[in-house]
Image (cartoon, rainbow, N blue to C red; front, side):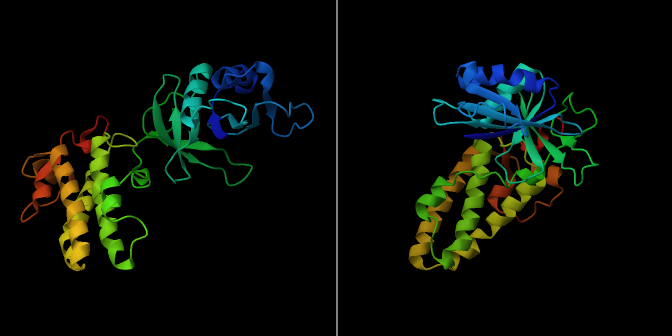
Length: 283
């Protein structure tokens, strides 16, 4: 199993062998930590290996860690990053599940998880820069504190109801309605899971979700009778989940948050999430 970490920890290489031994639960002699260009003094039979290199800028070390099949219970990348951050007393960055290359997840020494935007150097004279973070992190005092809307839709969430009625690989004429149902269902999944990946969701994207829901009736009507039945059954289940996760407020909260008129809207426009995600502290 491969892991990729970047850290600010000044003493990372000297301490990594002991840290990795504990995290992977292997003897210290079965851990090799080597500078990436050092091929002569490595333990090539180690169960856990780490190649590290110096990076210039807001971070100090880049590490590629590999655990062989001999390791019984390798941790997830998130768990490894959290344990290394706590042991080093420094922020540790690792790739996120979202496919936005510039956005990394950050594990802090306090056990928190957040995101950071990293600007990669384009030449050897430039420095790697952490230019923005979701939450203030002492390691990056110059980084702007902001949210990253670009990671929200990239997070792949389950759509079990839609999949049960209109599974993937369906015919071309059902793809549009499936896409609309998946988007609508994923909104309810986000609500139920407290708005991953950052416990936040901008009102503007929520409005886009409702506008896509507006298209559902016309798209379903264009289907054949049998197809309409499957789509309607899925929609009814998702609508019910939406009702259970929202409260009626006449659309007041969303109208104020997104500056949208609420006249002549469908019923779902007049409901808001129990804890509106655009009202999170710091936003």
